[in-house]
Image 1 (cartoon, helix red, strand yellow):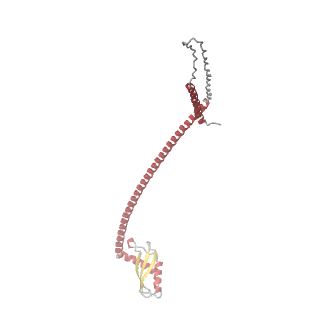
Image 2 (cartoon, one colour):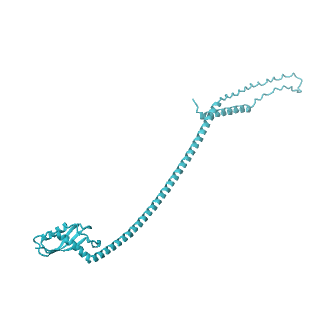
Amino acid sequence: MIRDNRNFVPVFMAVVLHIIVFGSMIVAFDYARPTPFTPLAVQATLVQEIPDTKPLPLPVQEPDPEPEPVVEEPEPEPEPEPDNSAELRRQAEEEKRRQDALLEEKRLEELRKKEEAEKKQRERDEAERKKREEEEKERQRVEAERKREEDIQRQREENERLRRELEAEQRQAELDAEERSFAARNSPEMAAYKFAVSQTIRRNWAVPASAGPETQCTVRVTQLPGGDVVGVNITSCDGDEAVRRSVEAAIRRSSPLPQPSNPDLFDRNLTLNLTLERED
């Protein structure tokens, strides 16, 4: 039966200890056993005054038998201890390797814990750095948005100021133009301009047979700068439909209308009073 290496030494030491104890008990027992007492034979002569008679023979006392010699049993020789130095060395080496392995395992575990702690610290530092970066980006974004809104507001205010100024200038220009137009409409130059336009239309008018003498029509002519006619509206006319059509046709054939020498005399919606005199 093969013993476990870890239990061999304790078992062997226990056996040796029992052998020593057993031997010690045997030796102690031999020393404690009493030695048998052997009585000594003493021969003596008894002197007695007796009458002069024939002396009786003395009884012969036989000596006690000698005790049998005690034969001491030899102490059992201890079994020679086996040479287990190699086994002890192997066990010592295994124990040293086990202790070294435990120390190495402990060192590796401490190193792993240290690396894990350092990794967690790096992760916390990285998370903190990213958080600061995000906060800085958000701050910059908010600041940029605030500046953009301020710029937009300033631009709106500037545009509104320019618009008001432009509208004021336009209103003023319109007022000035209306004043000049009003003054021009009542000026001799305006009368001469309208007469020139009316004469141009009369030259292009094919008077129908149904037109009576001194037929009058009030016409509103819409024109573009340059005199191009874009609309004709006969507001009143004492002629029939043929006369009306002939008047409109004459106006359109006269496009472009003559332009005034003074630009202030130009009227986009020019009102003309045409008197169509028929020659017999």
